[in-house]
Length: 246
Ligand SMILES: Nc1ncnc2c1ncn2[C@@H]1O[C@H](COP(=O)(O)OP(=O)(O)OP(=O)(O)O)[C@@H](O)[C@H]1O
Ligand SMILES: [Mg+2]
Image (tube, rainbow, N blue to C red; front, side, top):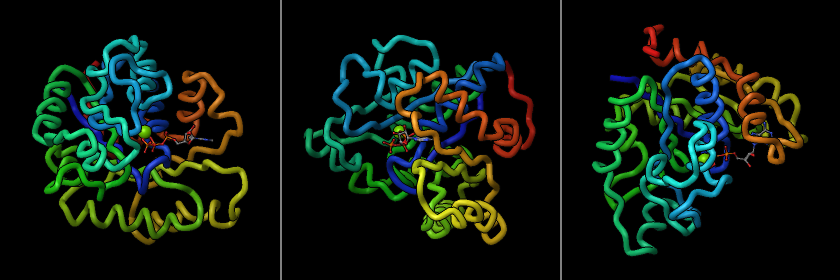
């Protein structure tokens, strides 16, 4: 029986896949039998064969698997770039939260570590009744919050962590991503530390901006990510230092 981590973010497009693939790459390099899963991907046009640029495609390639088995790495692939509930409704589909977590538990049974990537942030509707935090609660996994390093992040990161904690979810910490070259230097320099001190949210990493990031090979992106996050700290904090079976 393996262990799981859930990666959420303060919003969409903040850096979840970057973090998921970085951690996955690092675990595999250590010989740990790790997996990653993106239950719901919206804005996806690769329904039968994964595109190398989709989230599930990046996960597959990080695992050195082919792109031919979308359902190994994701469950719902929806075309509209909308929140899951609306993207599914557009295609007259209903997402089943219980199907998702049953699948999550199955993968976790088979692997040493499973990393799950959410969609958007925590208050993203999945069905009329359930949102992402309900899925997170069902998994029981500790959570990493991926945040922007820029001005505004104190508000977004603290609110995300507070809601997670109020729902009984353990917040392992936050990983900050610098996706812009400009920005307010003093905010970028201090935000993570302030959030840690004020709200007791550990800093698990600060991923520095790289101008050519998007053009880099996935393996190099993963190496760059890993240079800026502390995977040992993440494992220790997430699993209280428990040994991971290889
Ligand atoms: N260090 C970096 N420097 C520059 N750009 C970066 C860096 N890290 C990530 N990015 C870019 O930021 C964008 C968003 O990252 P990513 O796809 O990981 O976000 P996400 O939270 O997974 O998005 P989604 O909500 O769509 O799943 C990507 O285009 C990625 O290439
Ligand atoms: Mg993503």
